[in-house]
Image (cartoon, rainbow, N blue to C red; front, top):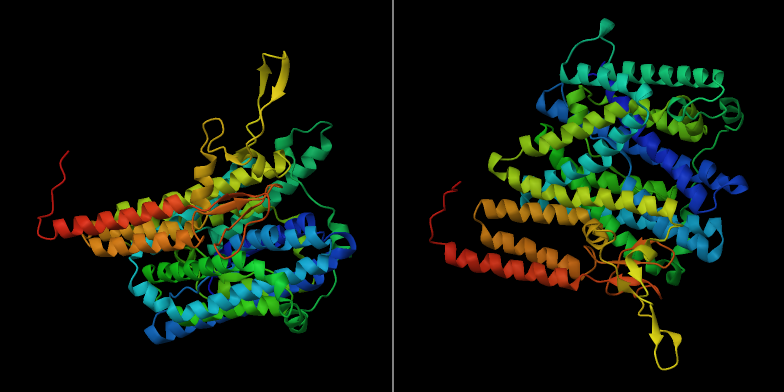
Length: 567
């Protein structure tokens, strides 16, 4: 298999844009929530971004090598490397639930950064250890359960997000979308065999700058005509060489302060487990697309990449990306992974992330990532037994609900001063007339009464579905696949797993702080004082009752013929 083929360029743009979005998110979230602005921005450009770059190039080079080894072993030349990059859910969770609270408590940017390093290291260790259990989990989990979760994430967090960006700036993104759909769905070869994704990015970028020039000529340009650009000359002047720095000594020093990092376990443990399951699902997705990789090997390197990120200053785990079948359908092989890793490490080392963001609009490449999300969703139905399609559908709902919860919380943070707490609680304080004295008397408030819905919108239900949604998707889909196969005892076991994870706080349970941040809730870690707490014991009981139901019906139906469906 060649080191680089023509279609690797399409794959590169998709993976590069995906990683670029994560790097820009790091700049934005750490700047606004962790005080990394002004002089403190050195933590971003001298430590976090170079550390992230070294972890990304490490993983991408390995997965490219792994693809060549698989090609050599199978005698094929169409093997596609596993995509790899910054883990988006961990990025958001670590900023809001680890780094921002530490910065708020200490007003120290360095303290927030150190807590982020510990969280990243802990996640990497969990991912590495999980690699040794990967094959056992794959053998005992229906494929529908592993792929339906990815499909739900693809619909919400990939396809829907980038579809909204396309229609947010249609004059920039619609023509690139058309080029991508023609080139990839119709498989039409463009002149000189130029990859459709490359042409789409170029056309979108040119359109953005033409619109910018046009808007500057108009005294009152409409908002939809303006593309937000930066002063690229200032960005170039601000670039500098920042080599990755070893931070192992600082990490060991922070580990000795047990009281500071012990509360982080309520965040690190569930996110580490989510990353293990997510990586396993992505490897299963690659096998369904025709590339069978060693799960323990791939996941061990995934964990090592996260550990490497922490040791060189990055607070954010890396992961095997969702989307292998999409990149394979693009025609990408191993070169896209190598090229992406090299370009990312150069951008982060030379401080060029802001420059690329200033020149190339995200909307120009949104169509490529949207298409990848579409392929992932289609694969969940195509690569599973036809009779398991309903199980795949069941597994979509928690992930879509998680996307909705994320959008809701983001909107609340912008419009309501980060006060999610105020939305789901009420003091229930009313005024009544005191007839005897003719004066108004205040009824004592009843604090923390849950407002389960707001204007008919089931806020509590959305938050419940969002917590641990990766587990919820997989378990519900697995149980349904077992029921379709009339394996009632297996379905009952999946329900028992759900009950146990819910009781331990890894699913459904949550706490909301008075200043609006939502966190996981584990039995062995006390909730924050004044927080609204929901432990989901009723849901755990529901799972237990479901397990008993499946087991009981299984006993009764053991000798019963399978009923035929009637209209």
